[in-house]
Image (tube, rainbow, N blue to C red; front, side, top):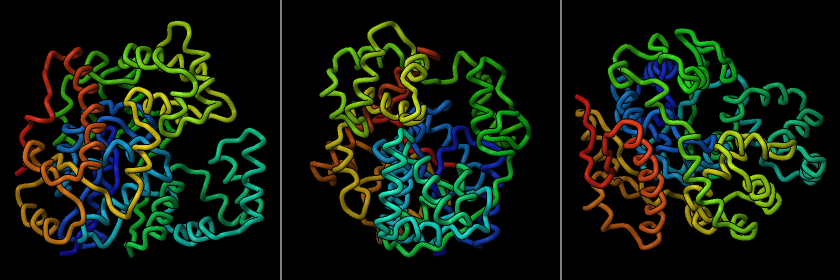
Length: 403
């Protein structure tokens, strides 16, 4: 089978994502598309505006054949580790041959740029460290280093999807998984553009609905509108919904214990706790902590890892090895059952269809990691219940199958 993979968040699934799925099928002529998708918490370190099952079903109804959940340890990581986890997940299936991603400049030499960044160049490394010591974030420091050394590459690293494309190519090189890649041009106005149109970014949609406005139904495919019908500021999930939970978690920490969590250096831990002594919302705290050295996304990820109790040790356990220990099946198309059989034959991971049955084959370490995913899902379910009165249970949920 010719199987192509996509790493996504679909937060929420919109017309640009539909375009990407269609173009992926057209350009590759593939037999199936497997999507590895963030769960209830996403790479920016915040909850998804829609729950993972609704986002997965949107993708399935728009052309994906199988949607798997990227464990929270990769889903809420930096762009580098998010890309690496996604590539490892697809490689773990044993039958995916290509990765498709969106980019602002699809003809850019992304693999060459990735190879250059991975090269062991002491002068480049020292220049990057010098920029970091000046108080710049790692991403900005790297862009500054590249600008001085390879100005022909630098322009491509100013755009968010191009940056992620380079991270995907780097992950492919680092894992030696041999994926070919398909770069599809973005069809929307850009990640940072906040204007809501028929083809706009997910960030524009999120800003619209989180601001209390009606859901922009023209921005999503018609066949998914029933999944978001009635979604508004009283049902959309935002980081601020978790403010009380976050307050409870942070109040129990010292700088030392907080810095033992995943990707929270000691200086950031102190900065967070110094500003968490007075009442806050998630947003107000993140804005108060933000500075030149720590971007808003970096801070949101730190707060997320505190909320979810993701330790540095657990994150290291997840990143160890060349495969992902388990992947939860969020949904599939009826005709994709042959694809599941193929993965069962070739894969190096455990596909979790029914938690009660399939977890028995997990190692002790994998079961421990899965507890972190279930905690994240449980907290999200509690917020959904508080907003809607609808109880969502991961352990009792039947597999979503779209005909």
